[in-house]
Image (tube, rainbow, N blue to C red):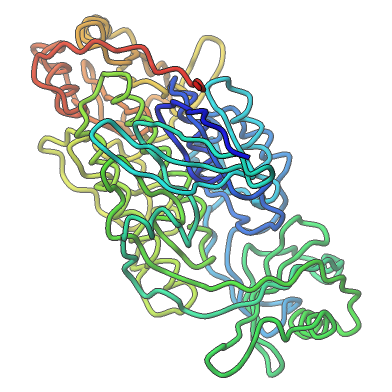
Length: 538
């Protein structure tokens, strides 16, 4: 059964995992309509990724779903353990990914399996009329011309085919990405590190682990080598064991009875009551796409980078990819940024992904690559360098232990401030617009923000950092802004520019900065067109 219907939409998203679903939510938040297609009939049936780092939880906070994810979460210490068996009372432990004593964020590292997370993201995406989501629908082909992209999709249940016309496409279609293959984009890096079989099982191991589970727990003894992952904080686990196909080993040879035996030997609990839920082969890979943009197609998530499970980096990098990309797509589509701003997506995100790939390998192999940077510095300390940042003469940021400082390109630091009668994080003041943040009662920047927003057609809001006492001292230390100064925060929460003190011409300074950051001609006036409507025509 076929149909001649054509769907017109500004952005087509291919893939309904965390990256694709977050892209749908973010585009809606920025006022852009999108269509998401996913070949599977629903969200993930396996837990897959389980760690959500602080930065991703901050993004979910901004989207209003932090609390719901918290209710679906479970307790697992944010660290990696190594021992002979899972129930070893004194395993070797890595440093925590999120030290509890640091007040660096209103969010915290959270353990929530992808199986629980994806339905939350799907509900959030479907709650907005600007998003259309088609599961059980496959991308068949696509072509790009000067007029845009034309893609062809098929409903895998009834065979109905449709054409989709779009301006841009986000390929979030996984580690084997057919879109990336079609574009002939190479993956650079170590590649396949080993082959594994994940034994998904249910067992009451908690009674044998008085200290509770860790994020990942590697075990090695004379009977078995593998990695345990808790997936619900109760009885559901994954035990991943390596196998070598080059020496004739086959994933299909692992029986349920043998799987139970391996789990018992890895756990160190003879006679443990184990129910095998599934046996799934997979490859541990580590590499990064050589290009993240080809024409009007952007790679994101596993399509752009593949990482080991160590450090919980893969899914979090994916979420932060689209957080960076979607505001730029919106700004270009709505007419308040030049098309060149889209080139900054790869310039900013690819170096971050490469660092995370190296770290994920180092955590598994111990072969180096993480350097002296703390886990928190990887999660919160990445600094973007591109034309979408107006750095001026600011010094480069030193990496190591995370220090919250508002250098241009960095994530804007968390500081508690007042908002009416409430005490909120500075992070709650940002997005989905640009935010000009100044000290209390600095009216000159408010006037400049109002003038330049109207002149350039830029989505820009003005906020003040109202705080006193210890909070005031933290604000001044983190933001480096004194009396008369201001900081410009991008919609993704990264610092675009800052001035420590007053300037002679605030409006002129802000005009110069925004024209530079958004790729506009100096003194240009940009009218924002109405976004295209999602429609189907015969």
